[in-house]
Image (tube, rainbow, N blue to C red; front, top):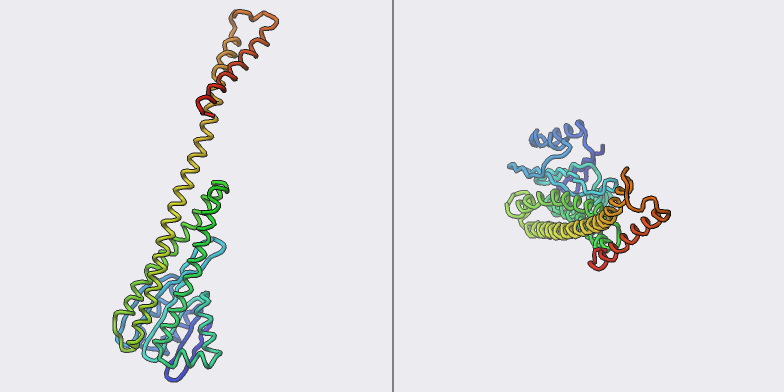
Amino acid sequence: MTTQAIKYGRVTWTNIVRPTQEDIEALGEAYPHFHPLDLEDTLSRIERPKIDEYDDYLFVVMHFPLWDPVHRVSRPSEVDMFIGSGYLVTVHDGVLKPLNELFQHCLEDEDVRRELMSHGASRVFYAVIDRLVDYIFPILYKVDANIRAIEEDIFTESTRHVMQAISFVRRDVIALRRIIRPQIPIVSNLERVDRPFIHEELEEYFGDILDHLYRARDILDDHAEVIAGLAETADTMASYHINEVMRILTVFSVIMMPLELIAGCYGMNVLLPFEDHPVAFAALMALMGLTVIVMLIFFKSQRWL
């Protein structure tokens, strides 16, 4: 639990990490015009991305991907932001490095603080979203690298290994699409709608962020198509392997049928020709061996083996 504030001129940036009930109550006392439902949303574990507009401030909830190395999937990390005239409040769980680094640099470096906060709270608001959106692309490049590894291994590694890798990547792509797509209408709203506490010149900057989100969405759509094609290829190879195994097993089953017939006949409790002959057993084995050889030659000529 950490609540820190940076003040430069008439701009204040309050950053709350892993908020508790006491933190949110203190935030409500410092900004009594914040709606109680918005304050309550900052304590919820996962709130849907949204933008709530009031006369004198915006409450924005956005999600950004965070890689989970244990389960090998991207998880959504929530950032809640209050933006008004002269202030920005960010509430998050402290796991997004770009946001932590930006606040720390602003806290420690006077030059960064002057550059970032001298143009108003809306410029800080833009910088936070811009850094977090840029953080998406290394994760997307990692997904691309995983897909390329699958493409290289699909004909050399075992089918089980390839199918497992495809399943992990496909799950990650689905998770990333669910995280990134809801952010697009939020940034689009920030670009299109004029608000007195957000500078008009930032419309182009928010448009640039929107272009980045569109690009991330297109990259994920391409990844989804590629991984679907790889999955289909892997399924085809698995089916072919199964058919090969079934063909070999069928051949062995067919070869055993006449042998079982001969053995069954001579195993019956009835009189059969030459059963008392001294070389009957050797002749029977020779007959069975000859049958196997003839059938193998036939299967080979038909290219079934």
